Amino acid sequence: MIEIDNDDNNTHKQFHNIKVLMYHKIIDEGKSSQSHWTSVGREEFRKHLMLLDRWGFTPITFRDYLLFIKGQISLPKRPVILTFDDGYEEVFKIAFPMLKDMGWNAVVFVIGDSKIKIDLWNNKLLTGNPSLLNSDQIKEMHEAGFEIGSHSMTHLYLPNEPYSNAWYEIAWSKDELELLIGSSIQSFSYPYGAVNNYLKKMVKIAGYNIGCGVYTGPPKFGQDILDIRRITIPGGNGALNFALKMLTPYEYYEYAGSKVLHRKNGNSNTTEIKHSSKDKQKQAELI
Ligand SMILES: [Zn+2]
Image (cartoon, rainbow, N blue to C red; front, top):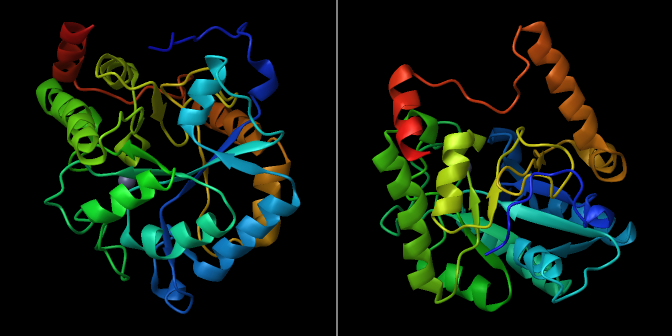
């Protein structure tokens, strides 16, 4: 078990500049104009990979990072972590072969309930194919060296759930996916990026070593590995925007911006999601 270190003075400072990118869906071009922001076109994604290669980045997984902090492996000079949320079928059909061709891998966060075949949480917004990865596709990606992480059992907004449901979503999905791939699941991605201290604690107790948020968590990678800030990569944003995100300390600007925004709104806490008093009571029970 990795020691969770929330202290700034840890020993891995040289790798705190690992950026973690968040993709969802990769689609065939032509469909992108009808689609949600989470859809990145095939050629656009190819361009991202070419640029990452040109800039000297090498994708790693959270598993690699955990082995690195245990001293078991070294990391490439310029590591980056590519993540895909929700587990759309196109990740297997489009992104997986492209990444494999480059000898690269990624982290794919999938739903634990294999009976769910389409994205029930998003299909009002997405006009494209809502199909999710099937069990064989998940296994094939795992066997090819991709990291499979959990994105809960059914993609609920966890801060609104009673703790027994949240526990089921977090812990049960880990068991289900471990049974499927025959290997341990180390990482969890909070549905909707919705995280709070209570959920972080659950994720830790369930045995995960990594938790991924979106706009939450400190900008410095490794400072809070149960709430990792990710950089969203929406479709149609162009190479210049991608360069800004990859080649500048973009996540720090975004963090500073959100701090200012929260201060203006009279709230200095950027990571806590509001709870009802009932939830607070349940949170207290867990901790
Ligand atoms: Zn999601």
